[in-house]
Length: 371
Image (cartoon, rainbow, N blue to C red; front, side, top):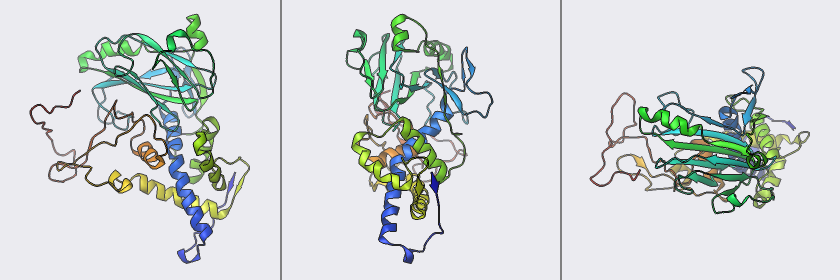
């Protein structure tokens, strides 16, 4: 695909067509931003090395990775050691990227006793469409079947009950799991539980066989600097593997004029290329702004500097701005019933928090959070 960017025109030289392209380009950036972020996260957090299989690629610079296996954080997080946007130190993480294009995968769950855990499942548009664990399926041993949008095979009897058959709208799924840990002395027990999460193809599950991890090419270096060309390439790669929902097909059809969703040999007009370049800058400025500025909210904070978390469900639906905002600032967020993310950036005096100071959080009697 060829994108030709002309010199930027002055405001006086713009036409109604230019205005339309600018508006369309900003809509495209906001709509597609979650795909860009998921491409980056998949490349950054999918496994480079698998037990018994070694490295997926032939060099440290390779973009090849392993999918369809669990990888786990084995230690409590410390400053500077987390790859999680909003980490906590009360759980150990379980991570997996699932490719469902070849058929369903069965996730075997250990008995965790009275210990809280959750596996949050996100489709490639960042919708947290399913949650497995204490709140939903309980703590007992069992399994769930995860399938892509087009699978129509016969469900095993074990997976016909509510919550045991999880259908994703995309063939790529990100699992973000957490298992409760009660301090450093409890870490070995949680590590043993982490090792008991298991993933198999449906055929291998039926036959009682292990399933090997699958190699795939993530194609993009996760820390490469942003560019418009890279953004379009990453989004288009994602769209080929994970088409948008049918209700958004008309919207994405309009984006083809900008080179998004277009064929590789398509030629994009200079004015469309310029509009997209400008929109990428504006979109990042918007998505990096505080939520009250993005959404025009008032009264969402407290006098002590805390901000109430945005309430999320299992799908963003048609709220494309909220979806983009979360993908930019809090990617991997689960629905609010499972995890809430209150934020505080200033102290009770309104001063920005600083690592140079020590702070105390006080709760009134009987007001400790129900955790």
